[in-house]
Amino acid sequence: MKIDLHTHAKLSKASDFSAAYYEEMIGEALASGLDALALTEHFNTRNFYEVYDNLDRMFPYNGHYYEANGLRIFPGMEVDIRETGHILLIGGRETVLEARRRLDRYADKDSFILFDELMDLADSLPLLKIGAHPFRESTPLHHLSDAQLSRLDAFDLNAKDLYEYGREANRDRVEGLAARLGKPVTAGSDTHQCLQYGSVYNELDADCDSVAELKEAILRGAYRIRISDELPIKVKASVMLKKLLKKLARFEAETAAAAGAM
Image (tube, rainbow, N blue to C red; front, side, top):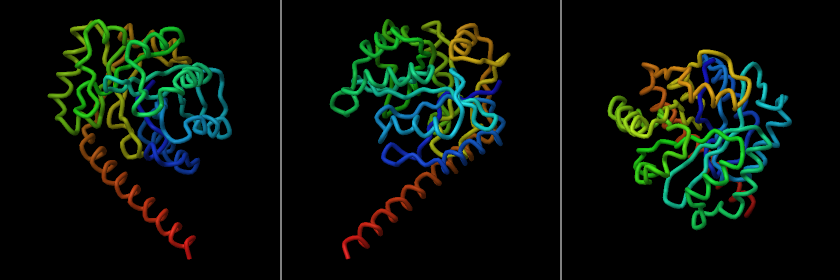
């Protein structure tokens, strides 16, 4: 089973969820060869709960994942911590929504949850916990203590960082940190735009029908990380298109506002 463990449903935190846009995303994920993905939308994105309300209308949910035209979508979210850094939490839909409800008072930038408190919350629920892009300059995790980082299940080898900081250099740093702590490394494209799918993914030895099975396979090391030779062009094209789409969205919003003021 080929699965991407770090993906988004929206172009940005500020944008609204679009069913048509996400349908296109799913089509590209399938075209890139993926069998499954974890949807780790930002926990403080605009109207977070509406993302899952829309998914409930769009696709059947079997108690473990959404069945999206042959693609398995495992629920999740990406959470900011006060010390700076992002944590991916992946689980069943109700588990993810319960965790998000407990984070309601931590959604503003000035009130992000402390890492240890987030781990306490996550440990009380059946969740897979992955440290996202631990060496990203804007949101690092490596500054936390080894005792803290050891509470995570795995660390994210992120397509954006492989492109930004160099494939070998970034991989060496992430794998070095994980090895020191005795933790596995998982691959995530971090896509907000469909062209980035397939840049990196995890190839599991067998299908996983639940997050519990997925977590067990990762902890056993029953998978391999695949990095596409096309990663640079996939990420560069995705970044450029994302910027263009954001500019277009701003232009449309300003045009609508000007028309309303007439």
